[in-house]
Image (tube, rainbow, N blue to C red; front, side, top):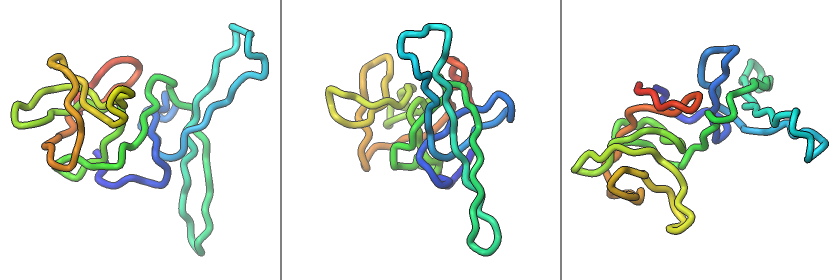
Amino acid sequence: MIRYVPLGSAKGYSESQKKWIYGWHWEETPYQCFETTQKIKHYIRYQNNMDWGLTEQEDYEVVSDSVCYYIGIKDKNGVPLFTRDIVKVGQEELIGFISYSIRHCAYGVFTEQGIVMINDRIIIEKIGEKKNGEYISG
């Protein structure tokens, strides 16, 4: 698991690279809104920092269901937290996934017992993430 957040605020899983790509999320949308055969493609733009202060950017197509956004905090072990991450939260160690709650206007952990709002006093630990529609540990 990464312990820092690379440039950009999103991540997505690249099937071709067989790994998570961190950077900026963007979509390639078909021109025809009503054409059902065309799919919206999702990309993560990764920035390589090279010598002499130069940069190189590369776009990787990612699985649309794997796109996650950094929520601005890290877990108790210093691991950056993203939407869709699976976490243990609180002293009761409830297990759920991170998502944005429109009702509360904040990020929360959605568990079987309800929503636990994320704040600076809560104990939270990442234990997995969502990839291809399935939650995986690690």
